[in-house]
Amino acid sequence: MSAVMGPNGKPLRWVADMFTTPVIDHRPKEVLICAHPDVAVQVADFIVGEMKRNPFTEAGREIAEANSYDVAKEMKEWNALPWYAKLGGSPDFGSTAVGKKAEAYALWAEWVGPKCKWDHKPQIKNMLEGRGGSALFNRGWQKYGQHDYFYDIWSNIHFGYVGIAIGFDEAELINGAGLAQIGSDAIRDLGRRRWPTTQDHPENGPWPASADDVPDHISIQLGIDLFAETKPHALTADSLLRKVSAVPVPWGKGQDVAKRLHRCSQ
Image (cartoon, rainbow, N blue to C red; front, side, top):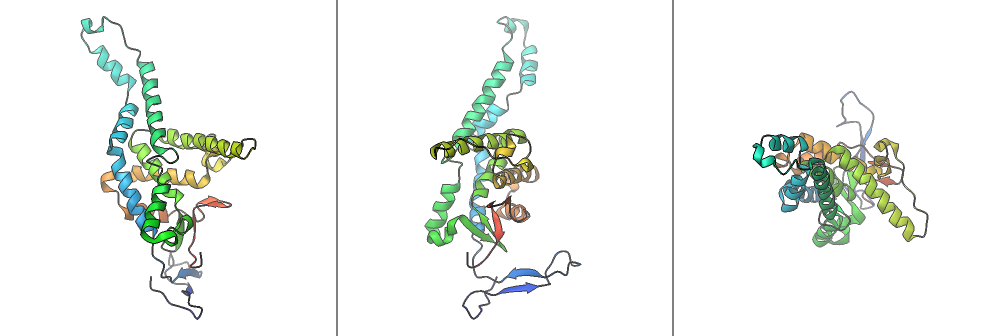
């Protein structure tokens, strides 16, 4: 967008009744005329690279293999063996399945936990500050179009997208995020010498999903939904940004939000 400067040296904002959707809506809309770059595009480019790559990394394949253990399939293959191959007795398929799932959870936690390789917040901060200092990072808020987005959303979108891609189901991801938030909140409270408390957001779903931050829950669900629509080979920054743009303000509730109208003074 081109900058139209006012007498105070800041970009003007127009209130227009044009370019609205749908055309029958004639209510005035605030359109920002702003010289600030869409920095969120850089972050979307980065996270899309991670979302396309990580399901096929060694770690991604290892987790997918652990998640793919199928008791019915294994039993069918064992039953099809010749009699002499069964002399040792039937394997304990149920225990093996439990062990494989525990392995998948443990590996996943090693990659998505705080400050781990697939926790992208430090990487995004370092990337933007390396390119433009603290001003480009802007305390975690990056502009795209008419809005600013908080940088927490990107790694949570990756969490949902890659988690589904490597074999977890939606309930495992949503509930697992809630349980992780319970642990994180407890550590925070104990560090402040307070009795641990949990969040309660029924709009996320039943416990433990209700214990997660609302913006995190929305972001994880977005990643899950995006994988259903667009597989890694077809994923682009544009397709991700269209999905992100469709999330209504405030992407959360109260003070815990991840999307706001862009203001040049912020």
